[in-house]
Length: 538
Image (tube, rainbow, N blue to C red):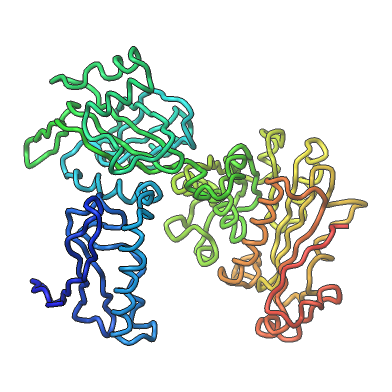
């Protein structure tokens, strides 16, 4: 068909549209081919913007969101690419639309269309731009006050919980915090463009239906009046998505311009973006139901060095509710290449800075650092409420102290360590009634896969301390092994004492130091680049 003139360098060609019933009629559509189409550009199909939110899969600016141009790296010629996108336009869009097969797609992708809707109302002067929810789900309608971070115009909605408060502290960065009144209402199905509330009367009707007339009237009491001291927000929460509204006539937004403040009244109903901050979403995107149970777990990590610090972060990301970190060392310049902390933490206690970092970045984890030895920590604390101990120090004295203390309190133990060059890593899991030291024997050396010559332990110049040689990248295998083992204990997947090994093969050993050989019991790993295996601890 005849080319359509455009104001840019792309080329547009209209597409033939078959006759459709009146309620499904489409008057035009076109394919747009960019000037760099042959080399790197992608062709796309568009429809008039009047169809946005009327027909599924039409996004901002009328672009059609379907599988289309396979791109110049597909091996197809430009002609074949155009043929493919046109074929898909008819087979994946026109035909299913004409049959009614796309009618439920507004509900399947509800948040995509809600994003288009609220973006049309978004301005630089509206008092609230986004709502974060910190509760996993809402079973009953409720009204409560929530923090409002004025400088960034964000509301943190949810029960008055420690997680919500930690999020406020992490996000506010010292900004002024006031309150909004939130009405949170569960709904059975997500809103679609046809069903979402269009005006204040629709909102009021839904609130009264869910809250009851008396409670609804109390909540809506000042809506529509000239003076109101607090913003009022409604959040409709379906199983997988939420829809927010800022009600009109709240306090004016004040913005400083020059030497004066300018007020911007809130006079209209404004749809708002709602994002989840509950642990089921932030740590597992609802795919890992065990994350809710992990929120009730408390892990004690002894040692916050090159192994302990990334393991602590991984456990925080995995939904562990509380971490206690014990380590008496400060961070020095030689540490930063292998530690999760960087140059800005040199000279500070490792655990204090690490706990602060975790508390800000992964708010669902309540992390506390104690810059002392485990002996000192045990003088004022017990293992009574600990679910798992992770000894990641590699120190015999720590293993002995923990072994003795666990005879008083039944606590799961994981001892994790790496061998030089990270040529092997080990995670020994000891459930509550199993002990590392029996008959006065410390078994660590017998579990190593190599008899290491003294020369591989490097002494620091002008210092009595020594260290093993390995890189942060090679240590990542150990971090994964130990973190996954700890989570298996926390998730109650391990009931017998076991030890897991990550073992590098002979080629890796040859690169690290001449003459290294695997012990006989580990020789099965000789021909592999790396292998994970598991044995009974006994």
